[in-house]
Amino acid sequence: MTVTIAIAGSGLAELTCAWLLASRGHRVRLRPRPAHGSRPLLLGEDTLALLGSLWGAGPSGESHRLTHRHVRWAPGPPDPPLAQSATVVDGALLCRQLLDRLATHHPDTVGPDGPDTPRWTVTADPPPGHPGEHWTAGRRHLLAGEAPLAPGQDDTTARLDRTDLAWLHLTPLGNGRALLQAMVPGPVARPTHLLGRLLTASVLAPRLLHPPETAVALPAAPRLHPFPAAAPAARTPGTLLVGAGAIRYDPLSGTGTAQALRTAILAAAVIGSAAAGTDPGPLCAHYTTRLRTAFHEHLATCARLYPQAFPDPSWQHELNACGAVTFTCLAAARRSANRYDRPPRR
View 1 (cartoon, rainbow, N blue to C red):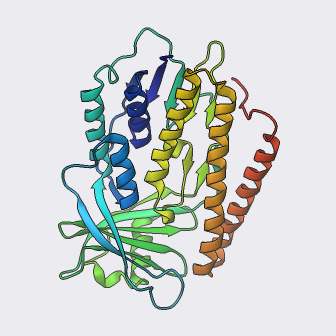
View 2: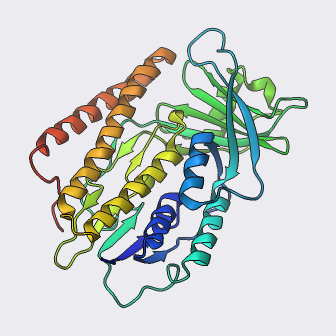
View 3: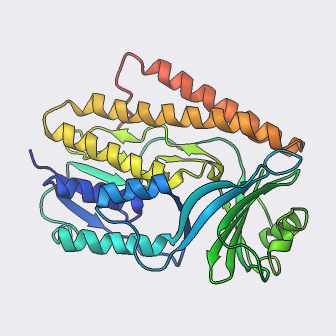
């Protein structure tokens, strides 16, 4: 059976879900949101392959190729450079390219809503009245700013370093520029100042001509929405949260884009199975369980890695938060073991 789906948003997860559903013959109504400037995005080979397999094409246009990754996570000398291919693209440009591809192949998808009521809504932003706040494992923030590479520096290697307070990541962007990021264990009042101070304490400092002149601080703790899926009711469309609105990983994992794409694949599978006659209640419960399981495993990795790098007591709050949210996930899984885990209807 063909159903109508409203897609609210035009990030990678929303666009990919729209593409999959439209390709399977469903009526998709996409409501794009305005883009907000350029956004460097580091895509590993596995993520690029997944993107290409879903869309039949990968990023086109300007990009920068990386060949190696160099890591110093624990105190002491760094690990040997690891051959690890990746590509830096403009995430906002990539989304515009995918939106154009969607509009070309499925022109009825992008445009005003039709007269029919959607059976499902797919979005990365929980709509007003959607129950439950995100479970957030900590308060850590990611500082980010661009700066010029020093003359003669290698621009094909991404580098991870750590200080007692933070980990730092240097990503060459091409054309003599680099993105510097630092993860710190809480909110920051002066991100540009702190990013420069962390750079000075790092072995990465000589690789930049000078510290970033401007920087932003973004919330970056792992988070999960407790109810990312709600089955349709008599007069209410079902809701599936995708991308960072459903689950957000610590940037250290490097798999955020791949995870966003996987939520789109799973959401499209839920809608397709429900349209074929499967009870949407268990399907939504399965969607929720899959995300909770992935989140639990991710928090376990964070709880193992962070103590190896940071003796600073300010990181203890982050470790405690990982443990508390892990306990919450396990308790929720036990409660829903013998029933459909549905949020209360508003």
